[in-house]
Every structure is written in structure tokens, then in C-alpha cells.
Image (cartoon, rainbow, N blue to C red; front, side):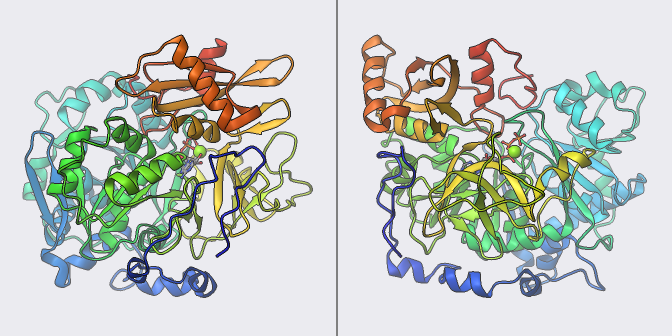
Length: 604
Ligand code: ATP
Ligand code: MG
């Protein structure tokens, strides 16, 4: 492996971090030891032998995740360990989860909800959420999870777009979020209430707990195949109105294989994915992948709380932890002393997704939690991790890592609009170090098959034999990918192409800054000026002196692309899945319409 070469013209210190080498003893134990060889030898067709398949033929995600184990020696292994917000704990073994999902499947079938029909699940992180998702997959329904903090309008939108025939929810969520819009979603035939609704009104509702109690714990799983639709996931809405990405049962192969490689996950692991199953990360890796691999899933009902999170890691003896940059930045904000006295010795691997991971955070992980944070990259559309820093490989802080075996990635030269230049359906790979649009060769099993109801939009994602991601990145000479920004977010300032991530990461190296959001504001001379919104760590006060200090700090680190303006803020707008919404910062700054805010954190 050659030494890391700082990539790009304006990277200064940000990407010049020393790579983190793992000790040989650690590397030898990883699931994927020889990356180059695995890339050479891997084929999805071969990997298919890892799947059990349905007895008698076919493929169903729920069988791979649950029944396969329930029928074998792992039947009594805890599949789900659920922590209630109030402090209780419920454990479901694989056998119990199989029986509960069978009961649910029987209830659904008894209500006439059939294969291919959409079922939305609007629940907090409770055992019923997992049971409903997996049970509905057994029936062959297309499951669309709705994040429980959505207000009535985003719920209505998704129910309407998916034309869901059924909805599973709780009494409280029903009253607050569904009742106000119930009349506007006529396709919805059945509402199943997990905890018994007392006033049924004029529509058909059911007491799910009662119905499940009398349903049979045996169920014959629908004989779905790899190309049958299974999941409808809405994107985070960071760049605009959320899109519905449809995934098939065959995606389970990618869930399983990528979790082995990128999360280093295996039988016996206690795995905590902090993403809610309302988002693709919480589904692919918070439900499906760890169960497929026979691990124990930790699910915490409560919202983020730094002390609680450290306690969960310790008390549950979490061995593999998958979380998000925003959450890690929040933990960092509470300081290095909070985890003191926390026994993190069972923790083997920390990994993160969803947003660019600042090098500062990677190193903080190593220093304070005992492991560097391993960044990986993927999207709702890709269904599974595509690019990752691996357990046995060097971690390059600030890089998303390398494409997984079975994934062919590239960067493509850009045209006028900043996206890949397509001429007569052909594209050109970018040079190493050059900013290009990140693209993937179609063929991995969890690739989305459709934007629900938007066929033209789907078609536009492909050109020259590649899937175009909409993200810009650089590939270095060793094949590591470095995120630059979403094509929509990059800033053009005085001839420089500025990725917000680079500027945000540089600012975060200053001890006063907990989080930053960077945008371009129009300027007659430079085209755009770089403006940073910064959130301070506790103990720091906004002042003109601090602003001057931060400006000088930025200039030293970034030179010409440093932010000209720095604004202190009490909070940055985030999507509910934890991403900084730069388009909203920009719209607010310029007094423009805010666009779709259905996924904005705090919106109702
Ligand atoms: P929308 O498509 O509706 O605008 P979204 O793109 O945020 O929303 P997701 O599919 O949840 O919806 O997120 C995928 C995007 O998140 C990626 O395209 C990328 O921009 C960002 N992302 C994910 N992982 C990383 C990472 N490791 N580093 C940088 N960015 C990442
Ligand atoms: Mg997207």
C-alpha cells in the first residue's frame, strides 16, 4: 500500500491525516482479510449459496432473517433485545420471533391483505415494529416503513403515493397522525392498531394484540422470488421531495454479504444500529442483515441521550455499533469525560453512515472509544453498503473507503451542470484525484428497481452503463473514495470547486465548533462566497473575537476556499435521519421558498 497522497488542490490539512493501520492480530480476525483477492474472486452468483432459499423453492427476506435460524440450533438465541424508554427490556429469541411474525402474517392474510399490496408501518421502535415488518414480508406484501416522528402530512403523502392497503400503527400515533388525514387516503382498507383502539369511528380497525393472540403461530411463507418487490423506502429528502425506492427480496443477499464485509458482523455479535427502521439504514442493517447473520439486534426505544447511549453500549455489551456522524458529533460535544468509567471492552467495531464523517470524529473514536470510526457510503437507492473502510484495512480518516467486493464503482468526468457528462449515452471516467460523479455498475442485488410512480426519473439515473449517484467524489490512486459533496451542494467560488464537507471538517478541527453547515451565497465577483453556520460546543460563547479567530483558523487551514462569512447558530436544520439540510440553510439565507420540509427534524 502506498502512502496516502493528499488529494485535490485545496485540501490543506483536512485530508492530509495519517492513515490508521490496524495491528496484525486484529486484521487477521476480520471477516474480510484479503481485500484484493476477495475483489478478484467474488461473484454474486457464488455468494448466493450463503442463502438458504425457501423450502421448496423461492426466496423471502423474512425466511432468511428469522425462520432459517428458528428451525436450527440458533432457535433459542436472542434475535431482538428491546430496551423500552422507561427502562424495561424484552427479549425475543429467533423461535419466538418466528412465531410472532407468523401470527402477524396470519392476521394480515385473514384480513384479505395479499401479496404485492403495500403495507405501511408507522410505529416507534417497539417489538411490534419488527414483528409487523417481518410478518408482512412473509405474506409477500411490500413493506413501507414510516418514521414515527412524521407529522400527518408526510404520513398522508406516503400513504397516498404507495396506495397502501394496510397500515400498522399505535393508538397514540393513529390519533395524532392518521386520524386527521384518514379521509384523504381512500386506498387504505385496513388499519391495525397494536395496542387496541377504543374508538373505532366509522372505519375498519382491528385490535392487533387480540387478533394475534388467537392467530396460529404457524404460517406458510408466500413463495416469493428474488425479483419480487419487498420494500418501499422513501429517501431522506435532503435535496428535495423524498422519492420512493423499491427493493426486491433478492436484496437480502447484498444485506447479508455487505454486513459481513463492511460491518464485520458475525454470529454471536451483539449489534446496535442506531438508525430507525423508518430509514433504509435501520431496515437493511437494523433489522434484516444482523438477523440473517444470526446476531442479536439491540433496539432502543428512546431518543438520543449521550449518557444513555454509553450505558446501552456497556450494559448490552455491544460488540458492533453502526451509527451516524451527527450522533457521533453530538457525543463528542458532550466531551471526552462522559464515557469515562464506561466499560467498552466488548466493543470491536464502530462504523458510521449517512453523512460525511469528519476526520476529527474518526480520530476521536480511536482516542476516546478505543476504535477509529469506519465510514461507509451508500444510498436508499443502493439498498446496501457500497463503499467502506474495512476492519482489516487501513482507515484513511476523511475517506469513505473502497468499493466492496462485488461492487464496481468509479468517478465520472463532469459536464457543465456539475453532473457526469453524458455524450450519446457514453461517459468518461475521471482521473485519480479529479472530482467526478460517483457511479456504480448496475448488477448488485439490492439495487432499487423503481422510483415508485416515477419511471422517467428512474431512467435518468442511468447512463453509459452506470448508475449515477448524484454525489461528487475523488478517487485516489489506491482506490479510496473521498466525498466532496452532493452535486447540488458544491460551491463554485472564484474558480474553485468547494465541497461543503471539506470546509466543515476543517472548521470542526477548532475546539469551539461542534457542528458546521456550509453553503454558497451569490456574489457578483466570485460567483459564490463560502458561508459557514457554526454550532458551538458547551462552554463557548459567540463573540466577534471568536468569529475573527474562526475566520483566521479557516483561512489557515483552507486558504482561498475558507469561509468568508461565519454565522453562529443555536441549531442546524437536520433531516429526521440526521443529515444537515444545506439546501434549507441556503433557502433561508437567500429568502427563497423552503421546498419540501416533510423530513425536517422538529417539523410537524
Ligand atoms: P434525497 O435523495 O431525498 O435528497 P438523501 O440522499 O439524503 O435524500 P439517503 O438515501 O438517505 O437520502 O442518503 C444517501 C446520501 O447520503 C448519499 O447520496 C450521500 O449524499 C449521503 N451519504 C451517505 N453516506 C455518506 C458518507 N459516508 N459520506 C458522505 N455522504 C454520505
Ligand atoms: Mg439521495
